[in-house]
Length: 49
Image 1 (tube, rainbow, N blue to C red):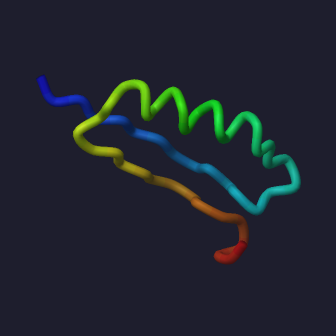
Image 2 (cartoon, helix red, strand yellow):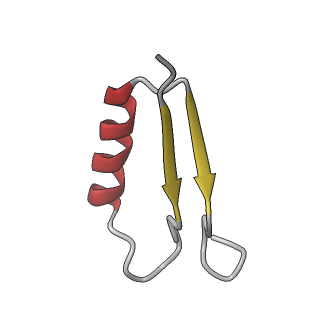
C-alpha cells in the first residue's frame, strides 16, 4: 500500500509558529513512513523566513 502524507500551510515564519507543535507533526509524519510527502499552501509568511 502506498502511503501519502499531505500537509499544508505551515507558515513557519508566523508569529504564531510553535516549534514544539511543528516537531510533533514532523515526528507523527515520520512515524507513518510515507512513500511521499505532499506540501501545499504557504510554507512561510510573506514569501520569506
